[in-house]
Image (cartoon, rainbow, N blue to C red; front, side, top):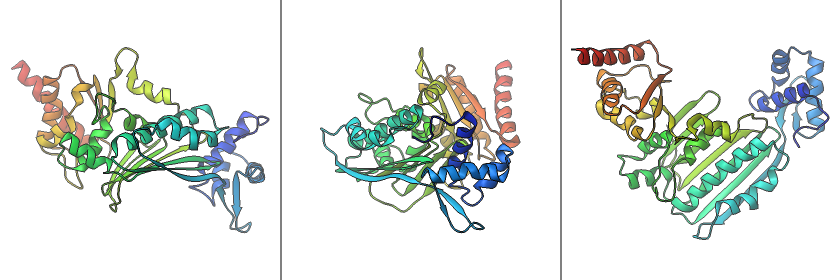
Length: 350
């Protein structure tokens, strides 16, 4: 158990805050907790010392230079052969599930969903021989790793869907409903897993792709090329996120998975600007499978007239059943969107 049943709600909240932030602030966790809850130093140290006594925190260094770290409770790595008989739930039950006993139910459910989805991808799509799974559980976080020695997820998607290059697969994965085997899979696993965990990352084909909560930041960088695919999932043990809550944001009982949220920055490669119709068409691909698309312009400082025209005039005219909503636009992007949309209205009136 992370907390004892006898603790009051405020004590659990304070100690949960300490555990959730100690890795990023090992030497200042006492001070930031004092500021957060307006407590005295002795009061915060009472919580810190209790976590140390219970084996949830480790203290290092002298009193003047003391640092804290969450205690490692579980650290395992196991290997499984990939064969037609391999099952994702068997791997979960054999390695992970028993070691998460005592964690909050919402945390376990998220871990079960993300882990089995990623293991299933490795078993059925990697074309590899072995899947390696790891669990590192501390008093603060659950960290799951799924590694296969196959062809690489981005290369496989690019090959099977005839995309121009592996990097384009990242944009398609971020949209959801992407699968190379539509008869057996819906293509929802990566989409929802990326949004359930605090940190989600894939390393494959010389690319590093990650998503972080709560900032909702997406990152694509070049990485050293290693065989296969590595997926890493991280979640706070005191997270209040639920798998059903994430599903509800993008799906409903009547229409299913009908809403998506797409980071527009993933449509560009490197430092290139978003200026052309071909870039816009790359972004817009498969949007007609959704009824609502939120286009997140975070990190995009400007767009060209042709790009904006294709997204906000041409596509809506050809796909009236899809509602496009721009988010996080700066003044320049917003002005360009309004320019092409007003042009559309003028043309219709004329």
